[in-house]
Amino acid sequence: MPGIKLSEKTIGIIQQICSDFRNEGSELINVLHQTQGKLGYLPAEVQEVIAKELNISVAKVYGVVTFYSFFTMIPMGEHPISICMGTACYVRGSEQVLAEFKRQLSIEVGQSTPDNKFSLNCLRCVGACGLAPVVMVGDKVYGRVSPQMVKNIISEYKEGCASEAKSA
Amino acid sequence: MTISYQLKRVDFIFKNENDWEDVLSKSISRTPQELINELISSELKGRGGAGFPTGLKWKLSSEEGDDTKYVICNADEGEPGTFKDREILSRVPFKVLTSMAVCGHVIGAKEGYIYLRGEYFFLQPELNKAISEFEYYCKEINLDFKIRIFMGSGAYICGEETALFESMEGKRGEPRNKPPYPSSYGYMGKPTVINNVETLAHTFTIFKYGAKRFYDLGVQYSRGSKLFSVSGDTPKPGIYELELGMSLADFVDEFGDGDTKAVQVGGASGFLVPRKRFNETAIGFQGKLTGISLPTGGSMMLFNSSRSMFNVLDNYLEFFREESCGQCTPCRVGCQQLLSGIKAVKRGEKNAQYLDKLMRLAETMQYTAKCGLGQSVANSFSSIVENFREEMIY
Image 1: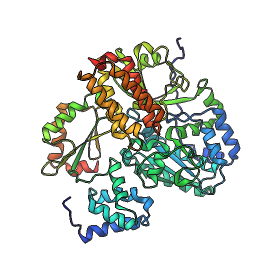
Image 2: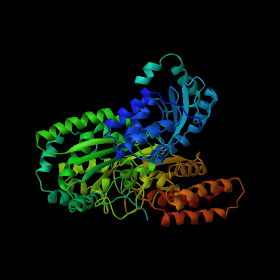
Image 3: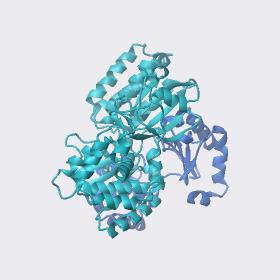
Image 4: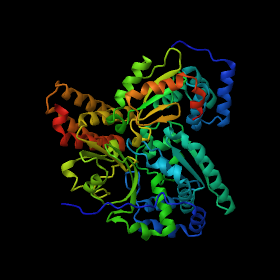
């Protein structure tokens, strides 16, 4: 794996988070949430620092990071797009919606656009089955999405309302 | 046999919670034994799907001698087609908090946790606000009880109670062997009561109005009301509180779009009921149909005749394969094999009899898998393959 060198500052951030949780191994998941929130993702190098700070093995950290779907080892786009593939959404056509997103952005699931503006992911039920099919962009939820709506959703984020959408 | 209970709407859960302070202070002035008896006589069963008697759960933990005990609210609502807990936590959070504190009083716990599903992070700020208001009142009445939110990280299996403990302890969410049960060995190895969000909301009703009001609803073995999350091909998706014991036929009359071919009761881990069985199927614990052992109940997904049941099953198996924690072989390999098996049959690479082999595999998983996830794959698999065999093949 091509290593990345963490800056002193980044290491400092991670150390601070760990000490906020009293450097306890049982707080690993909270630490990972916080760290990903600050850094955006959890590459192996970050996991090594966390393991050292919490005094647990890197294998354990890696095991937890790869177990939970919320943790990612690759950076996400500025606007992560998630398409719900829960059953209610699925039968109401989320596959076509996903296909349209792939087509519009020319990326596959798990990838980001070259400008790093969008990334595409699938979710397992966001708990909004009454609105199926559901798409999330960042924290914002779109209900009853049809393939025809995809273009408009994407353009919302292309045209500088990014900051507004983020706070929603 | 035709079951003739009418569909009855009930309005307890979302009714105002303004008197929670009153309910809390009155409840904790009663003895634990009284409260346990009240719960037991209401015959409330866990609303997550497994249906364990709530009163008994509290009683078992109260009898443990440990100094440190925990109360956990399971808000890891992950069953596809379920969205009731989210609604409870955003509309009547104080009911849940009150019941947690009363539970703490009963079993002798000073700490409570809400294990909140990762996808519901947006609920966190409001919920934290409610918690601080709640703790402020607790201090006023000299009740020593703290509540903290623990955020899940996107793993369906963590709804299983022992996997949830593992996850809270900072580990991979892999279920433990049972026994020991959570009532004696739960979070951090301490006696723990873990209840579903909805169950706690119901206990509030019971402490407020008394067990009888609750017991009078529903039918034998399935007392009280329950929230149902209705989705799929229906003109009115949403959350409805209904009395238990209704027939599925009445349910479909109310919520169907006139062309309902089948209803999935209890989400991916539940059962598919085809149209011809609507009349003989009741929704309640004895009808064996409120979800089996995974902690989420109340998912009702309607499918009309335009839906391919092969696609539905394909989606479920895809889900299980993804969410299997991989710890035990029957579940890890079983889910993969069931998925590739039905695809092979569909493509004509295997003959139709191969479906029977797959059914036997599903049955084996039911007996040998370690936890409810692997055990309940057979529920949806067998009920779909049995009832819509031709759709699996052609």
